[in-house]
Amino acid sequence: MICTNLSSWICPKNQLSGGIPRWMCSISSPRLLKLGENNLTGELSSSLLNCTELHSLDLGNNRFSVEIPKWIGERMSSLGQLRLRGNMLRGDIPERLCCLSHLHILDLALNNLSGSIPQCFANLTALTSVILLDIENDEMRTAYSDHMELVVKGQYMKFESILPIVNLIDLSSNNLWGEIPKGITNLSTLGTLNLSQNQLTGKIPLMIGAVQRLETLDLSCNRLSGPIPPSMSSITSLNHLNLSHNLLSGPIPTTNQFSTFNDPSIYEANLGLCGLPLSANCTPLNDQNHKDDQDDEEDEDDRYMTWFFISMAMAFSSGILGCMWQFGSKQVLEACLFSVH
Image (spheres, rainbow, N blue to C red):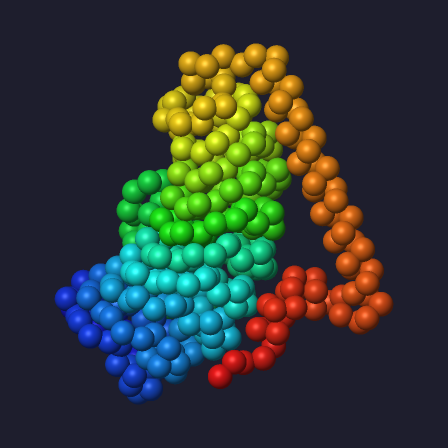
């Protein structure tokens, strides 16, 4: 296989070992760096510092056991695809990744990452707008020559010509904890969300139905509690769902897409769930508890929005409203404005 040309280093599945050479991005400015499915090890920081023009970085299924460099969000401003799955990466998911306005594929599955999912994921703007394929566009033409293997609907799938319009977040099989950020419901064009096999707690965001282009949702093998949000039934594009092995309770929705989810394994090991396709019938007590959970979550959302608008007013008086609206937190704002060397 040819490993390089003027704009790419593409050399997967070649039994390469050792570290990534520092000169790889010094002798040219590649847009694609594809070194997945090898036996690469070592540091990422010194090797990738000069790879500032990358549109796609794929180091999946190697043996890297370091932290994700925090400066990726600053130095790789054009990055649209980041695939680091199947390594031994440790530490937190850097908040600076939220500065990547072109990022539409984030695959960090099958690592040893810990901590919570960054709240600033709501600011991944490439997942809030519809992208049209344009082969006359130079950046899009580069992406057309690319391909990537991703796990979608529970199986590996190879994407080629439509890769530029694939929108995916896969954080499965790590050690992430805490709640699913409410802001993730802002990602209206996200197609695949896989958070399975972590240690997530709390409730499924009430307004998950706002992610109207979601086709695959896997939240299995966590410790999520509360009801299945009724808004989820409004995602008419949803065709692959897995909520098994959690602590969910209440009746299973029956409208729209949920009428097609007839496999009991989708909901198994949630002892508090009831209704078809499970054998447990719902009782008036189940329905009342479900209503109470909904009321509690709506109250929580009301408090969240009240505090949000109070914060907006305070921010306006101090002249920083625009920054808060775009970046959401002081830490992420600083990360996007100032380089850390």
